Image (cartoon, rainbow, N blue to C red; front, top):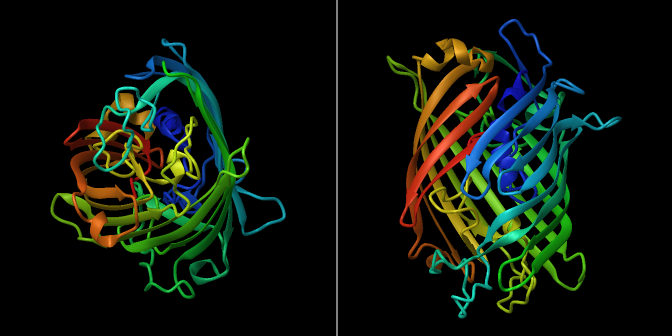
Length: 434
């Protein structure tokens, strides 16, 4: 599998936020991807890169790693970078690594250390907004703090594949692909029944975070460690790009501050995604209607704040009831809205044309682009101080946009542009939004 040719896009994912802990992004299933002849290729790559963003300036670095190594379903790679505004970072990521002696045990891991000169956080502390309320549903978009600081984390995701459903005999699912999609003779997903169809994973996610910001008002810092527990029932036909079936995730995350064990927090969340195959057309290879609903609740959330990035009894932004960013409400900045409770809805219409001009361009052949996909989408959601169904559906925030996805070197890469009442955002990521 030639997964490592998309390191540049993966870099954006790593810079924005940890990839899995607490976020219930429905990580890809443990897969072997084969060519039409049943072969599995292992690839190694060293790739320099350059890109530019508003908060980093011009950034450059190098990524290196190997796919289908140390086993057929795993990959391991690292990235280092430096920027023109004196920011720097290093990342190490491993996926679906089989734990020795555990046939059904697998591990994802993400480690990062970095110092950034322009970090932004929607938290109280901006002197222009002494009344506070940063990140609430009705908050001012300029109510945030910004400054230089560290953003470090270490995350583990231990995954156990239950011997039920389609994984009764084999924990690793194998797909044989033809031009980036499963061959036509693969059986469709069965009915929603974890005992008889699909694959069920138990996930154990220990983690640690450390982050500082040094705005003009003085140093603020936040640190937390804890454990996430979740169950994922995946009844999709092809998890990297589903066309039928559904996926369900329920989880709870709990943590404490490194330097104050009394500041404990707990966050609960759930997610459900459904996919409807709308069939082929004369010029359309595949069209799918994808729907997603997500909700979160932090029962420990308190209103009193202190001088830390994480206020009393609240989790880090990536683990609380937050909206905005590359997963939910893409028309808003990352973690733009945060409160005790949140709800979100997303709807995408995914179309793969039969015509694939990107696959015929000689200067892109090294990416092995099997298909491209255009995706109009619309989203709605809001945060609230209580999990109240009526309040969560009043004065909701919404956005709409268009995405372009490609299957490049057997990995789905997406670029989304979304528009909201606060402007527009472009996100370049690995994997579908849901």
